[in-house]
Image (cartoon, rainbow, N blue to C red):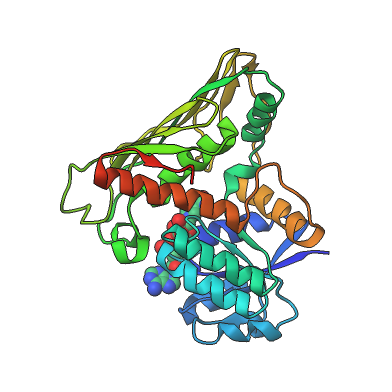
Length: 333
Ligand code: NAD
């Protein structure tokens, strides 16, 4: 069987997912949800989507009667994810929701509960969780190649452009760089170290108070402590380019990814040498694997379900709290 996907929000990333899915065997784009009729027309002709599989933000609840759509993939701005996921679940369809899954852990938990109640699956669009070099490092760590893990570093940043975009609007983005790209260092630290952090500290710096308004973070450095004694040191920023690096260090070895989360080929090496797994478009692999999860009950190496998304949101909540208080926030509860 093939996973039949409708994309909600036909913007930059939705387009990337749709194009990547052309190469999928197990997933196929069959529907669209958009508020812009001209975009729907364009997508219909580019992807051969029939009129009956096109919806807008007013009528998409009717998707419940559509037998040609199994899952809705939500690629709208962050603040819309919560309500949209809950509406899709109520329509009885599985949901893939882009990261960050929601604006905070409370919203995330409501989404998980709504999907559970509707008996549909909720997955988060975490493409790195399926990336071959990333998975190889996780395999090596699990098999003890790096020994006891002591340290992780995650650097995520780019210089953001247009000051009027939704990413710099607190109402639509929910925050700043941390929500958007710092999240890669957060879940990267979790899957690289292989433990859940028990405390967090964080510091914010802002150089441009006009571009980065109240509630929109420009640069946050944060530190995580893990139960086994490992620590992580991370940087999330909208104000520096060439920041895309993961580093994992253990008593017996190390792993390095740079670039670590960009769309293009990931480059990696460990103390044992270069990682040579061929590059495959991240979203193609992701959608193949997600089809396996939804249709065949396949268990991914690194979970991508709603509960996993909530774990990241709890850490995001704690980082913002640590920035505010300047203190250490306990995550072990
Ligand atoms: P975008 O601005 O290019 O696209 C957003 C789309 O949502 C647009 O088509 C816009 O018209 C639509 N939209 C619907 N309702 C809207 C409203 N009320 N206000 C504004 N736009 C509205 O943004 P994007 O870069 O595609 O990001 C979309 C989502 O995808 C975000 O949650 C982002 O974090 C996520 N994303 C994930 C990755 C990844 O690698 N996993 C990469 C980029 C973006």
